[in-house]
Structures are given as structure tokens and as C-alpha cells.
Amino acid sequence: MSDLSFDIESLHAAYAAGTLPATVIDTVFARLQAASDPGIFLHVAERDALLRAAEALGPFDPVAKPLWGVPFAVKDNIDVAGMPTTAACPDFAYVPERDATVVALLKAAGALVIGKTNLDQFATGLVGIRTPHPAPRNAIDASLVPGGSSSGSAVATARGIVSFALGTDTAGSGRIPAGLNNIVGLKPSVGAFSARGVVPACRTLDCVSVFALTVADAWKVFSIATRHDPADSYSRAFPARALAAPPTTLTIGVPAAADRKFFGDEEMQKAFDAALEMLARLPAKIVEIPFERFYAVANLLYEGAWVAERYAAIADFMAEKEESLHPVTRKIIGGARTLSAADAFKGLYALQALKAELAPVIASVDMICVPTAPRHYTVAEVLAEPIVTNSRLGTYTNFVNLLDLCGIAVPAGRRGDGLPMNVTMLAPAGHDDRVASVAALLHAASGLTLGATGRTQPVQPLPMGSAGNGEIELVVVGARRRGMPLNGELKARGARFCREAKTSGDYRLFALAGQNVPKPGLQRAGRGEGAPIDVEVWSLAPDQFASFVAAIPPPLGIGTIMLADGTSPKGFLAEAVGLDGATDITAFGGWRKFAASRAAST
Image (cartoon, rainbow, N blue to C red; front, side, top):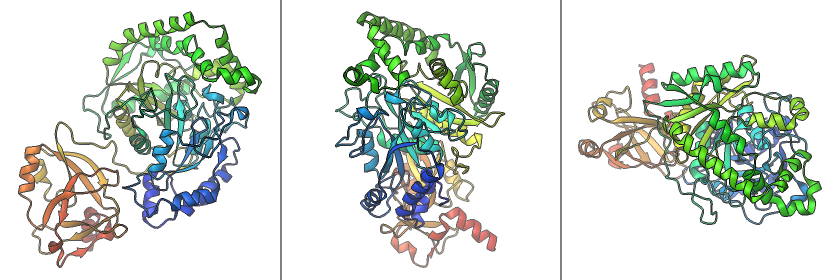
């Protein structure tokens, strides 16, 4: 079986080095077979169909198609054209003619749909075993529940069978499975992803979510899939933002010590304290906030209005084939028949009062950090008490969509018994970038391997900074990078370092001849004739940018540079005439590596 790492950066590096899509596709099938878990997928694409889809992508081009050749899975309550959608209820099955909006966007970006994954039936549950099919096995410890409802998507990602997977999240279904399988689970702001083509659970709360091995991968998917969709009445337009470094004065709210609930799991309690210590070293100011009213919001989710909303989504189907439902699912949703419209309005009134009460608490901090799950449960424990255990798993998740918060679950260490610890960063809707930037730092600080793959985290320059307050980004290739001889020219103008990056694969790098201070020259080549080159991105105020550009000596100039992350800032390029006598050093992958090699040989 191939030793390819399926995080997107590593996979694209393998493609750039000559790995073929057929090799990646065969690796997917080999890993699925090695997992020996019939509960992960409910439908798998045929190999020949995947090869045809890969062939249709054309030559490797991660700029035009930022997910070129990346395998992903889709929860089986989200439509993929030509694949059955069942919501883990065989009698509900239908074959859609068109993709869900989010699936269509990801396929257009070059991603390959491997198949449809198992779930708690009709996305009703947080345990991952409420399915008429074999339940997916937790990727870390098979005696534990995998978490739900997006169980198959999380396990497929954690095992490295796919690079990422789509789930859904109403009460925590995109976070709990991430937390229990040592991966990232990004729950966007409600409406950021279109829900057209998704079987509804609670239509007013439902989110399509992303499972990934790294925050960078989850954010790449988020950046592609976040689009306003006029065909979805609940879709909202959120501003597109790059993933920016968190503020230097960061305040993070956490549940007051007296309000924390771990239901007897002392290891989870200790691991959460350790995660908060890591956050404090970012640095961040940790502030305890009262949490009882958040729990009051959470309790509303399985009362009145929102149970009725689940029933409304499948009422017609239940009227015809109620016996097809999983017994626990049938009990929960069927309970809505005893509710009245008055009960629904009482729930809405109660939520509105709690929102008003909690608004100043939420506004008092930059974000909130909670345990993703309060504890791990064994399959046997859940089978013995299916309702109680499920409710407890939602302790820190059920209130999130009701309060219109965005969130991201991220690995944050290991407990004393070796099981994963995972926390969720939360913020008001529209601040997905804020929580992701902190999650990226926390994941890197944890030093954890990726999911259950045993592979180390790739070295990724996250969180990525970006120009702000009218600043202009500048790509720096050589001697003006940090630690290089001419870096002072940038600092003297108040330039701010944003991030490390790579160009697209269409550039060549040269060591220019006749320079007092050795300098490189970057030039864009034809498609497929170059390689990704290491660069840095800085930002300057407009007046400083103008004076800096005016002082650049020939043969260098400023042009538009295509980066592998899909952005295209201005940066240093070399005139063709300036390459006379220059040495092609593209093979080094960047000026810093070339300079180090030259120093070593000297």
C-alpha cells in the first residue's frame, strides 16, 4: 500500500513530483480494504469512473483547480449525482440527477468523490451507531463509539482513506466525530455553505461541515465551498477572508470551573486543563464565563420546536414507512406527534430570551473554547443507555447552532490513557476565520499525528497572515526574506510579515549574475515547465509600497505572482534580459535552500 500522506499539501507535492491519479485512487481502495470496516461507506464509486473523472481534470494545475485530484467522501444525506442518497434508511433511497451545491463546487475545484458514508439515520444522533447497517468503528479504539451523526465521514478521514469528507451538523454531528477520531471538524456559520441537495434534519439549523486531517485542509475546502446560493433560502453571503493571524491581545472564554461537565471522566477533565494551558501560551488570556445558560439553550434542541422540525422533514415518509426507521430514531422523531404549535412557539420564545441574556457574555470575549465531547463512551455503554449517553455527548455542541455560532473542533493533545483530546473554538457567525486561525496554532502546538494514520503534521505556515487596513501584499523571493541581507529594507518601511508560501508550479528560479548582493530572479514559465518555489508574503502600507517599488533596481520588477494557495499578490519578477548569464536553480525549490547549499559547499 502506498505511503502517501493524504493531507492536501503532501498529496499535491506528490502529484507535482509525478505521482499519477491512478496511484492515488488505488491507494484509496487499498486503504479501504485494509481498514476491513464495512460500516464506513454505504456506496463506493467504481475505479474506472474515478479514473475517467481524474482524466477529465487535465494536466496537474493546483491554481486553476485547488483540489486537483484530491479524494473526498460525502455523508449519505448529501446528494451526489448518480449515487444513491439514503440517509442510512434503505427504503428512503433515491438517486439524484444533480449534485448538491457544495459537492458541485468541490468537484469543479478538482476533487474526486470516492463514495457516500454511513451516518446515524436521518442525522439524528451523536453516537454514530444508530444505523441499520454495520456501524463504523472508531478509528482510534474500536471499543468506543465513533461519534455521529457523521460517523463514516469522520472515520474515512481519520484512517487516511480520503483527504477530507463532508458531514452535516445540526447539534454537533460535524464536531463530535472529529473529536472522538483525532481530526479537525469545521462547522461553518449557518448558511455559509448551501444546503441545497441536503436531506434536512432541522432546516433552520443545518450546516454542511468539513472533516479534515489539518486546519489548512479544512480551510481550503471552506474557502471553495462558501458561496451564497440563491436556490437555498437559508443561504447567507459572508465576506471571503484569508486565514489571518489571531490578534496579539486574544481573550478566550471557557466554561467556569464549577460549570464544567465531564460525567466522571477525570482524564478528559485533566486533558482539557492541559489544552487551556497550551492556549494560554499562544499567548491568550483565558477568562472563565458562566455556562449554565448555555446548557439551558442546549436543552431546548430536543424539546418542542426542533423535534417538530425533524418530524416535519420526514413526516410524509414516516406516514408510509415508519417501520423502516431505526427504533431509537423512530422514538425520538415520533415523539413530535404529541407536540402542538403552541409548544413550538414556547420553544422559540425561550430561545430568544436566552439569546438576549447570553449576547453580552459572548461579546465579552474574542471566542469561546469548550471540550468537543465531555467524555468517550464505549459501544456497550451507548447500547445500554442510548438516549442518556447521546444527550451527554451533546453537552458542548447542542447550543451552538441555536445561538448562531461558528466553530471548529481541533485535536489538542492526548489524555493520560492515550485517547484523543479535542476542543472546539466558537465565535459569532461570520468569524469562521477567527476560530480557524487559533485552531491551527493549537493543532501545531499539540504535535499530534494526523488522525489514526500515524503520519506527522506537515509543516504549514498557519495561521496565514494577510494584508489588512488597506495594506498591499508583496511576494518576496530572495534576499529580502527574513534573515537575509536585504530584509532591513522592508522592515525600515514598516512592512509586516504575513506568511510563508509557495508559488504555483509554473515558475523557474535563477541566481542572477553580476550582483553585489546575491539575488534570485523569478520568472513564470509555461504550464508544467516550472516548479513550486518557496517565497514569503509581506504587507506594506500603500505609500510605503509605492516608494519601495520605485527603488527596485533592474533587472527586477513587480508583477502578479500566482501562489499555490490560490491567491495572486504582487511580487518580484525578473526581466528576461536580466537572465543572461544567470544559473537555473529551480531544483532547489527556493532561494533559502540554494543559499544554504552554497554556504555548505564554501
